Length: 95
Image (cartoon, rainbow, N blue to C red; front, top):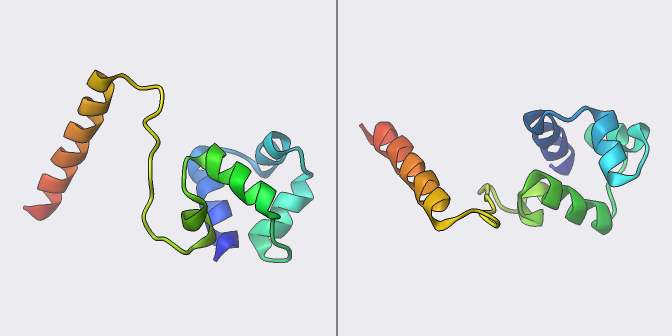
């Protein structure tokens, strides 16, 4: 559910509820209500949180289980390093 994802992504990103609320220009109690499942963020805030957490809106909404990472602003060399690291992790898991 979206409330689980918001909390998971917020904590994983190191944001407090207050810090996320400030980035979204909402109150801390709004973020708390979203995380508790009392209310649901509007489409505008779903899109903003997806951008903040670098995930798709589908992932945030629980429609897609895959996490995505944006590589915008990285050089080709930096992107290659990331792919090499990912390949290394995949090889370790398959052994």
